[in-house]
Image (cartoon, rainbow, N blue to C red; front, side):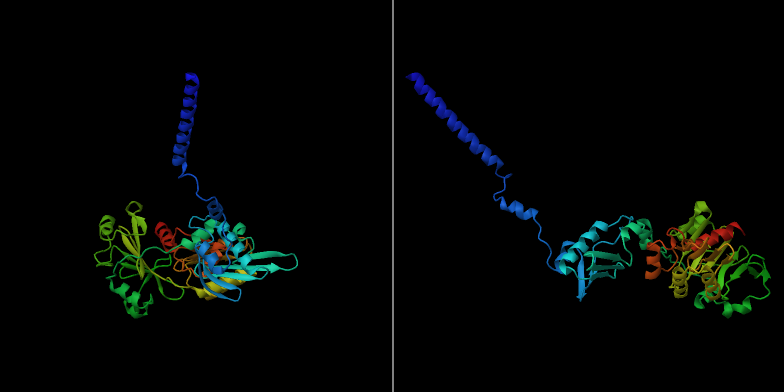
Amino acid sequence: MENRRLLKFIILFLLVLFFCLLCFLSFLLKDFIPENTNNINVSVTTQEPQTVEEIAENTESRILKTKNNTVFIEFAKDLFDEYGNSNEAYFNNIIDDFKKIYGKQDFTLIDNKNHINISVKYNQDDKKYSILINGLEEYFQRINGDNYAKANNITIGDVSVMFATDDYLKVLRASHMDPYLMKSEFVDGKDLGNGYVSYKDDSIQIRMSLINTVRNIIFTRKHEGEVVKDITVGKSLKEIHKLYPDNIFGGINEDYLGYMTNDFYYFFYDDEISVYGLTYKDDEQFEKILVEYLNNKDLDRFINAVKSTLRYYDYFEYDPEIKKAHIIFSSRGYEIDIEENDPKGIILYNNYHFTDITRNLAKEGKISINKDENLVDKIEKYRRKNR
């Protein structure tokens, strides 16, 4: 009898203990178990966008306006990022969302800020869409991301604050490098046989352009007085660098310091100061001739137009028999170095003033760019080496 009572007591005790453990476990796990399983379905399921505004919100873009089936939009991303990586998936998702809005209608997405034009057309015959991005099918497969990023990020560089104190430079700055106002000062020059004429007992050497402007003026050791505030010819590079530490060309270890101001390029050496006028503006004539050449691939016509119209080149060589051309326009920042009629031999340097036309041509790889070099600095290095 006593054994039966003891057994009942033990069973009851175990039941109570089990119930207490169950309650305790429920208390511990309540924060990990959703109160309503329907909430899980809501968080996983995303609602399809119903308007263009909802598409913009989902993609962090901004709708500027819509007109008929044209949407003016600012995308949150460019076609390629700054490192040349493609954002194809991002744009494919946006295009797919707009397809659901417009159905079997044609539509266009225009981002003027990033120079993106996406044209989507529906073919009723094969029931498929064709997509043109900036006029090209399969855009991301055809465009090199590195070229795109370089064209987007290219810049002429920072301007230094440096004031010309030489009277001749002041006149040239005011006259946009036209020497007419100081022609009485430069008489009886000596031709040096390298494109330069020496004046003032060889204290100044000048090279003219074909349009009769001063392309380069060199102050030699014989020149007296300041050329730039606090700088005379022969001042040490270390002293110059202390006064003007923001050089963008050369360096003390390279034996020269180069600067760019709003008006001039300055190159300082131990024995001379070399100065070029700065031109940084659209070159509409060149771009017109360039686009015509890319369309017709007539190299003879292209070179003839360049030679007769753009008369501010530094160097010109053309052999029509082998279709080889080499022309340098250092002040405008482009070089034509074409062989076998390949337009990729047209190189735009970082001192070229890019427009939408040339930037897009560079992005598409139709012409080349040199993001890291200024053509004035390049030609000055050549002059110095071969003087």
